[in-house]
Amino acid sequence: MSQARLMDGTALAGRILDETAKRAADLTERTGQAPCLATVLVGEDPASVTYVRMKRNRCRKAGIESRHVELPAATTTEELVGTLRELSADPTVHGILLQHPMGPHIDERAAFEAIAPEKDVDGVTFASFATMSFGLPGFVSCTPGGIMRLLDEYDVDPAGKRAVVVGRSAILGKPAGMLLLARDATVTYCHSRTADLSAAVREADIVVAAVGRPRLIRGQDIKPGAVVVDAGYNAGNVGDVDFDSAVERASLITPVPGGVGPMTIATLLEQTVDAAVTAARQS
Figure 1 (spheres, helix red, strand yellow):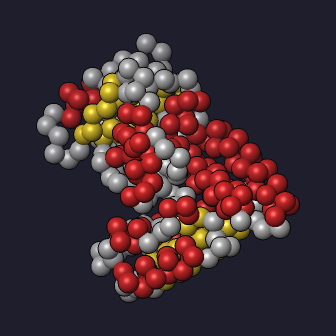
Figure 2 (cartoon, helix red, strand yellow; figure 1 turned 180 degrees about the horizontal axis):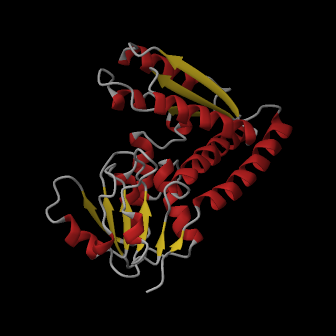
């Protein structure tokens, strides 16, 4: 069997960002106000600092204003909620990104719920999960949304397919499964308590690995011809799938890096412009 074709997230994300930049420029010209994404960072986690800097750079290239709020590591949940509510009430802010992790003393869910749904461009609130699950207008979680765009780009129709999502986080695994279900896939969620994970994966036409454990999914467990989406990112540019063995059995596979990651940021910025366009229409 020939090697799997790579699903090039970098190329697709580039096209999405080009279109996003055109829409941002058009909106700025028409209204005099650029789309604005506020990023909130609690503490100085090195990876988070790097991610936020990268997102701000992408904002600048796309003609999106970036407002960065840095809070000390000792910030309380109450203080963080207050900051997020202020940003939600600010008409010059169109999207809000709360970078995580935030430290064990923060009630992460309370913080997310302080973000107004119409500014939840990262798709992390209860409201966004509900609209995703029911197929209603709203913002998708960025990584699952990016995964669906990649599947569409490579003509992968989930309808009737057996999809296995490995991971059940609130902003990746769970919404990825709901988006696949909305497209008529038969979805199985797997996680740390799943008995015989290998057997579940072997049945999958579409595998989404989103658990944060390097090379957890082995090539020998990939059904020949399956589509493999690796949403994991671990130290040393290693995903949750053992790429070298999986590429010999899959029909399509995302590389790490260059697969899902660029799509996450592209979806975030696209949704920020969507939020700004909606706000301008309603003003």
